[in-house]
Length: 269
Ligand code: DGL
Image (cartoon, rainbow, N blue to C red; front, side, top):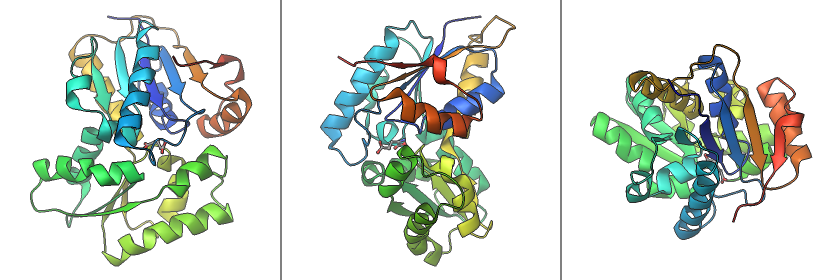
């Protein structure tokens, strides 16, 4: 049993897709969240910059005496070298393997699309992870960098015309490939789940990496007897590196609860 919090980080709001699912699966766990909103997006930056930012995020969370670290960011997950993550003093979970496993299990015809940031698609991390699990699959990728900005700007309502047009534009080449499964390989994208689903006519299985990663976290905590002992609801502390207000507004809509008093502005050094 371990009452220390789980540390979760992303460049911005996207990692909340993991937090929301952790709240549902493991309601007694304490969570410390870091959204590096002052430097979002990560996905259009160089590999060196992404690694440096990720290391600063990890250092911030390690100072919070956490028991596990979750890279709730497709860009970091597919870029951070294993030498760094495996040297951490606590278990590290990223979103690539859990989502790849789920996609391989769900795809009937083995035609799998991947959407994510430029850096994620360039790394081919999802493709590699899936081919290790299933050799008969075809993977089709398309980077969708605009969507991160739309989410960060709060344009997340299912009927938002600009967001709908952007998603449609990004989906077109994948639809031509007749995919049966689509990995939303950036954690910002499940916030637009309904838009993706509707534009795909509810015919393509969507893989939400936030959900998959949260299930994976649960399995690791159970396996190592590291779940929280407390029977009361856990607390979540939110930290951001830019304005608290805009994060609070969009996060509260997505999470379906007011989080205002738990959001803090922090500096990463
Ligand atoms: N949520 C992110 C990801 O999963 C980050 C997007 C970005 O900062 O570009 O890739």
